[in-house]
Image (cartoon, rainbow, N blue to C red; front, side, top):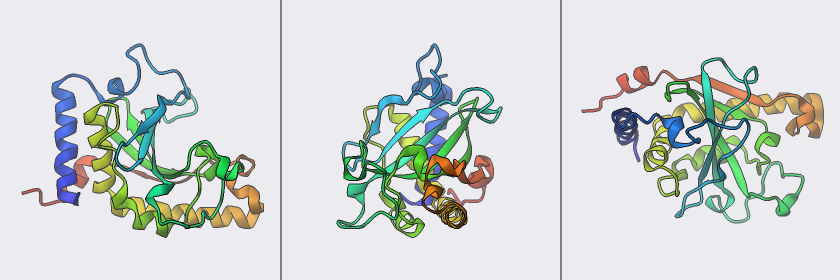
Length: 218
């Protein structure tokens, strides 16, 4: 999916959500509201074709920005990377880790269901198999969650947002690695664990109208 195709998909999915009067969060969490920290869906939304995945969750008040409802965590599966490629940092469980995924980026959503920010997180937050930024950047086009069992509009919206913002996500991943290097110099191996005290490594606000307006959409 190229950037223009992605832009049209983002516009279409947001428009259809509005027409159906069901904003994004009501397509992901129960109507009675989300339980803080719970993954929606419970076992993640997994693409049937490529195993890319997402989950959405909501932080408790005081542990999220005032205008944030919740956020997506987006992942590639290790099988989407070259065979034999060694992670830079492994989960403590090694090959016995529950999910063989690598975290791509987080997507924060405001209380109206509109994307508000991208961010990256430290390894321990999602217990990922951590790969260097340049590996993740090379495989950004492989992220696709169009074929999970969850809401089709949400799936297509998430896939398209990553395609629309590949350049920005690439920069966030590079910033993530630079911040991680600083933490490693200070904390050693603990830089990638909760003991570092740092969860978010890079972030960028989203101005979707400005982004769409910068493109020639024909």
